[in-house]
Length: 271
Image (cartoon, rainbow, N blue to C red; front, side, top):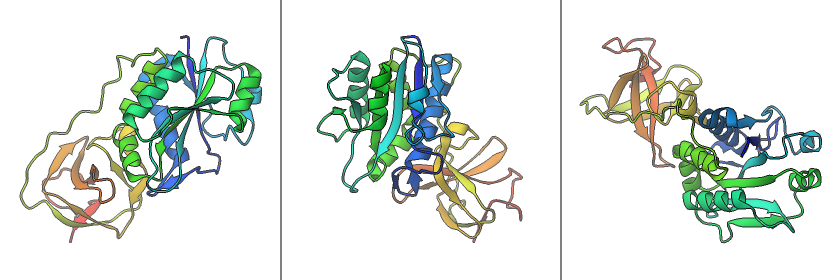
């Protein structure tokens, strides 16, 4: 296949579905960024500042005939609903891309009774069909479901790589996966800490990387967090770790600079 074009759903003031302090628009933009990073020049992310549904952008979109267009979304419903699936135009038969994508997204995010749904009442599905564009929409699980959110956040690179593989594309060899942190057992580091700054980012690994930021979640001045007896010095910071109450996943925050002792300007001060 020549190229994969991506639309990140919602945006331009529309957050889409929400759950667990996260928004659909932000999550699918983070996923689009990873697909691009891993797919390189074989992938083009279309303007993420737009809402492609609201402004009917597909009506004016021109892409090569041999290219594919994928629109990224997350579902929202009751908290127990979960699972990913693919949507195509009613009356169409799924092609090889649709089948591979549906199988793989259902493997990572199981729960839906049907892996491929045919719809005739979705504007972008109809617009793409009218233009003869090779299009499908993928729902990457339910943002309203805690387990789906945890999978989406912790396995984003796997989802991105799977999407690439579904379209016959491979990961760019120059992109290294996030390194696995080496635990360091340290007595006395754990305890309750208070944040001294606004917007302290929470990450899925203790490194400064664009792809490991937990979207739409941060600590602000005065917030408290209980860290465990683990730390690591990396990228010019001391990192602390805790387990998310809702997700059950390990999360990492920068505590301060590696000076060898607590400092008044640390981002987190033990109390």
